[in-house]
Length: 266
Image 1 (cartoon, rainbow, N blue to C red):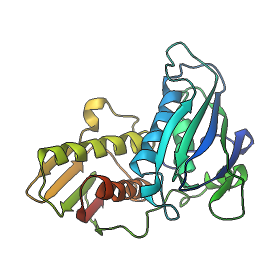
Image 2 (image 1 turned 60 degrees about the vertical axis):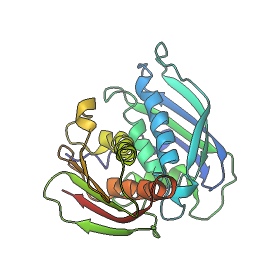
Image 3 (image 1 turned 180 degrees about the vertical axis):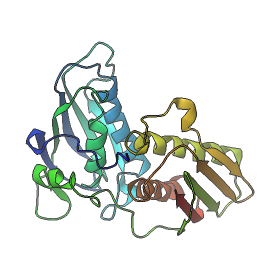
């Protein structure tokens, strides 16, 4: 079964007061499991959030991927001896759209290793709430668990051409650049896909989180193109593709100019 519609925590266990902004703000995050469990996976939830923010994946239709940024301010960083069941972090975030917290909640549902339930989750920013789409409360996030289209969306004005192509199996991405490719650019594309796999594989792989060797895609390059292909993930073409789209907008700005992106999802 595809896992992309997992409910992370009941609405009664949610505390959410968050208003998105392109400017940095402090956000307090708390996570409680029903029973003690080694904190490694809980810490991974926070690490994935920061990866998403810094890579532009947490942007969306109302916040540019270029605004994204995140860093840990306070909280456990060495979870070896900490089994909770309650942890608290403070992070500084910018450019994280409200809908990205749906992805975050699905990540948080794995903090107990799939055996210990997530009991409570708190997301509290420092900005006052308003009645715009930038603000998020627990009731709205709770309703999003029941929807099929309540995920972070694509940035609507990418600086490159996007082609969605047919793909019989797996995931493919072909990038055509405005400059000649190099070994260094190839390495940075590989790192982009490593980060993308970190963000999406726990939710969208049918049979659980793959081993480290399975995360590497098949990548080839020529003078102006780099193409990557995954054969071992089975994705729906919506949320994971939108995250990759937003990451590529950031990549275009920070690393190398892209002319065309071809995305294919089996």
